[in-house]
Length: 34
Image (tube, rainbow, N blue to C red):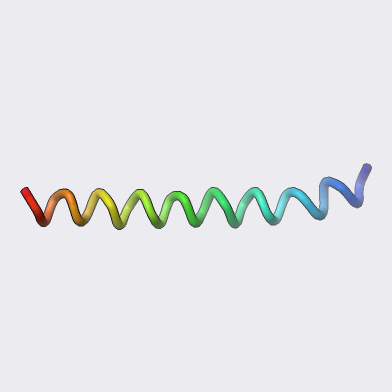
């Protein structure tokens, strides 16, 4: 169980950070367009 958490948690954090960066970039692009 501990191995699963250690394996899944970093991947989840990385995915969330990546989504946050993408969302921030999209918001920036939308602001520039408007």
